[in-house]
Structures are given as structure tokens and as C-alpha cells.
Length: 208
Image (cartoon, rainbow, N blue to C red; front, side):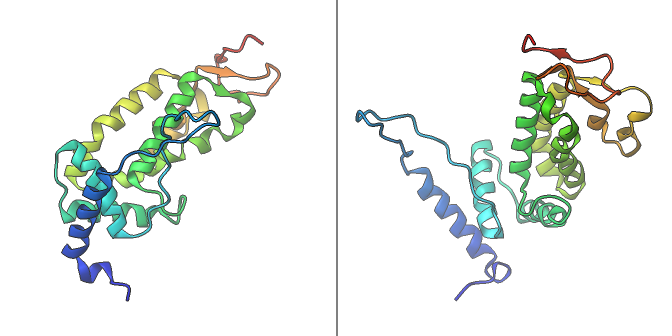
């Protein structure tokens, strides 16, 4: 019989914490190469988290590292944001997954953006849009805990990009300033067409 999470409430939370403690004791898996030597363990990407009790487990794991307990209200706010934005974005996207995705996007832009995907650039910023919409739905406690990380990623993004000038700068109308910036560094073919608003032209870093 499948227990409804709303009915189980505290039991689900207790079970999640117990499960986390057991998981924390498990050794990390390591692969063995053909010569018998053990290779470094590879971090597995967590599957999409769909159930509230499972998401509580993930939150508990993260909060254990932060040494700050979450309340039921905090959990509920994160789940509300996830469920509210599922239809507009990718199904099952969570707060921690989206923050991690934003970090990957920022790191990629710092290293240089591939001009082959220049017309997909603004789609890459959708994870920051998700965070923008999710933030008002989160409790003060969750926002306070995650705000330093978000600020750091935003600062890095701002440093790795330049402002778009003129009519193309439309993001400011709804406060999404990240859409008003373009990468300072790119790589790829010099004959790849770039948006006219990317002016002055970004620096090519591959020597072509």
C-alpha cells in the first residue's frame, strides 16, 4: 500500500532522515580498470526528484552540511516553487538542480561561449529565469541560505559578460538583467554570425 505523504507527514520526514544517515555511511563506488587498478569514484547525477518525501531527503542532506535545520514550512515553499514552475520549464526541476545548472552556465561563459550555439544563448539563461520566479515563493530562511551562492554566481556572470546596448536590451523591462548581457569571450568560426547587439564584438579565444 502506497502511503500518501500528506497523511504521513512526520513519519516521512523521520524516514528521510534515517535513510540519509544510512546513505552517509555507504562507501563511494569506484570503478576498476582493465589492469586491476581502482579508478576514482565518479559522482552520479541524481535522477529527477518527484516525491515530497524524497525531496526532503535531498534537502536534509544539504542542510546537514549547512548545520541549519529546515522547517516544514521551508520544505513546503521549495516544493511549491518546483510544482508551480514545472509547466513553464522542465518537469521535476528542483531548487538545488537549478542553482547547479546556473553555476554550469556561468562557468561555461567564463571559459568562452561556443558561437555555434549563439542563437540558443538566451535559452541557456532559462535556469536563471526559473530562479527569478522561484525566489518570491521561498521562505525567508531558504532565501537567506541560498542568496550568497546566487549572488556569487550573478557576480561571476556579470564579470564574464558585457552589456547589450540599444533596443535589444529588453530584459530590464521585467528585471531580468542577465538577458541584457552577452559573453565577453567566445570560440568557434570567425564567420559564424553574431547578433548585432553583441557590440563591441566578443574576444575570440581559440586563435582562429
